[in-house]
Image 1 (tube, rainbow, N blue to C red):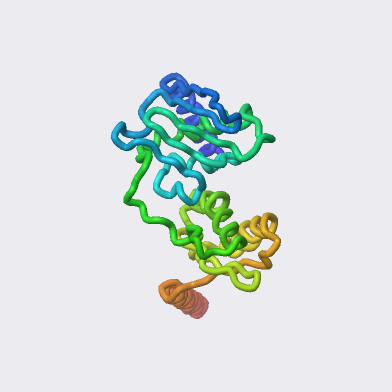
Image 2 (cartoon, rainbow, N blue to C red):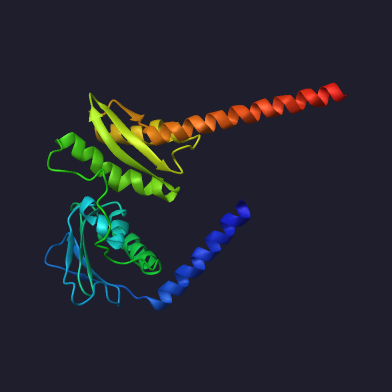
Length: 242
């Protein structure tokens, strides 16, 4: 594990040095002191596309680049042009000298991913904020999209909003998180603590399962029972042979 981590660190360091030599990002001030224009030195959007404005993390679901930039804490909105990216920070107290290195890193990481800047074929996530949501539900969904889901997705899973009733947030874990032994810890120690810290109305978090999940869980439990039964029989045969 240590060797693998060391290799990853060395590889990342080498990749960063290559990027730094091949990609030079400039920044320019704008009339708005809370907005800064970044020029990556290469096209951002095709000339016929025009511009794209992403005022919130929810609106950025069609843009892998904008989503990556929203992961930088302090980013309020992202605006894409033909050869530039305008970032607006959340408030005056956030200093650009703190944000800029992280934004540079996010832009460089994106342009090595071979992902499209914008993909209009991506369906909106089920947990997107809708006009019918009350303020608390909208805050829960926004926090899930901006702070929680990116972390869960890095581990090969996902978490989607199901409902918020009487202070209880019901979520559905997907992918690697579905049958992960630490899923309960993730829910209680991670997601629940974060939601309660930012949203006092949240009293608890629960995991929901659909019919497919329940069937898969039942099959897995039956398989485990069969394994234990077979192991018991093997041990009994070995003891009798002795």
